[in-house]
Length: 402
Image (cartoon, rainbow, N blue to C red; front, side, top):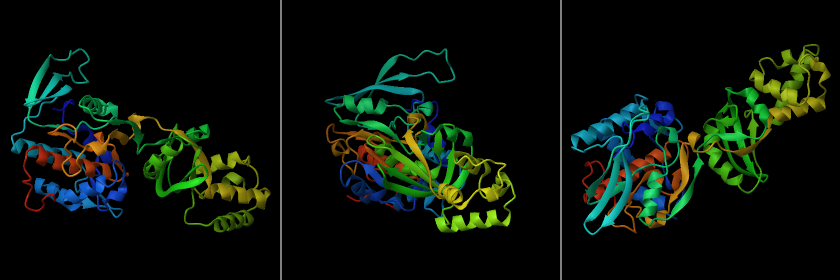
């Protein structure tokens, strides 16, 4: 049962439409939350290479980046959705689109799922269909979490699990852009630049990454920010969190000062704005100059060593305070969810309700940025599907381990 008008809507949006579906470095250390050892036991039950073999069996060619991220070779998320859809057809599965589960109830013979047909989002005048009941021997909840509500994310699956007796930890956005307290970043909206990023909470370093930063009208985004957002948002709940941007990660402070001093001394009469030309991204270094009250028309030679050193220090360590996130609309995943102590990590069957299986982002376990969350979704789905069907008849190339 799929409440959207087509399956895999969230998959289509991953990896900027290219679908970063896994990573060559999958291991339990890249997962957070959950009961101790949960991710490790799951990855032992279905080793990462076997999940990739599964997609190979479906006909999907894969390609790995140097950093370990794995994509379809075509770089098209639609190909991932299509090979999964083709397998559904081959197996004779019935796919009910625009169908939303309203409740799931356990009885002596199995389950009763109350469903309702929902109108497509583009049809504003259509009314929901009548309620009807579907019976089942087993149920898999694979409803995803509340991230990206604009493409179907919601807390519906969490509500269904809660109604069946499961404990739910309040979900929070992770792998998300960060809001910045300083309003001056609005002047840099749309700028992308390569830099080092370090995040501090209460003055203590909690993570560092290097890569492309994207400035927005509310703060910062880009792979380094997304990777460190979990730690940043956890820290901001209890203390001040700051992002420290290094615009010259390949240079030491001493080397930057030497570079600036040589430029200044080679042309002391040049206006400061000309002195900056070619040094780094124009709007960014102009903003930093302005913060030190250096006039664009001032001769470069008028900027003496102490002020020049201060400017060089900003190029190496530009500090911005984190004020929070934009919520689930811009988050790629959610932390929190159903307590994994209530789930069997080898099958994803509920320990509370027999023949109920709960997978993916519904669970209180989330992965790092880089394909880890999608890999966990595939793994939990394969294990739950096999167990729910009372079979372990995977392709011969891989078999889940007991």
